[in-house]
Length: 423
Image (cartoon, rainbow, N blue to C red):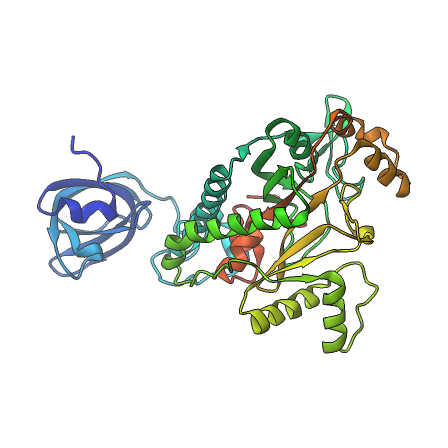
């Protein structure tokens, strides 16, 4: 048995007998010759044979001679070929997968995802996402972080009682985790630096192009920080590593990678509100958060003034941030927190956390919240925790902004939202 060769490796085997395997991407039967394009995970191979080609999306193996042909994909084709059909489709795909563009609407793509995702351009989007995760991991590994995996079924809501999916856990009320926030903070007391990549769940009835009920969160938490600036510097390195790792798949999609500045420009929330008040018809001063339109305007300002597609907005008001957020010692109404804007959209939220047990009890009391539901979480801080902070980045939103696609569902495998529970 000849060992299988991937399409992209065929040039290394020119002149030899080879075996490739994959799907029939396209078949063309001419008068005296038949061309069959076979697609595998690495690319496509041109096969020269005779007779009628198998139906498109048939699964085949091909044995033949790898022969130089400058006009073939990769400069090599398979001649003197024998095609063995392993399975044939019972029905055609919802659109022609061999076309260089995607001639289908988003609902068609989502309804037929198991076959639609075979289109090389759609598949490349998720190869970009996979490469981004690999870059995130390798960067943080090099910085002394430990990868962890925390429960997704929890006894209490992560940040509040709203916007959670409740479940019956053997007769006890439980919830799908909104984030690994409580776990990753506790693990700072074990490993000092941790990160996780995994699903999170938000029962938010949003029907927008940027929200999902389930998405993949890239989380990190680190101890012994001076303030949120240390967290921002780690985040900058993680983002740069993700861009570098994704460059190969970005080239497939003809997307230019963004330049990550050595120091991402920073704007305090109060300064951002002043800037918006001077340059828009509305006055956002006094509001505790930025509207999507404001995020777009601030991103345009960063590109214009700093040549950067990234912008840190720091110091969000404490009343908008979770109870575990550390206040700015110099301006207690503002927080040691930040959002990272990328191409007009909030991409990352992070900041410094409280680390003293008494401060947690005071923060909950100030908000009128009972500390009892958080007893397990608070116990970590009763045993000594260093100053720490972290961030969370949504993978699907990152990939959508990186590729310039308008809807987050286009960069989500089998999305779950207000209307979709299948496939």
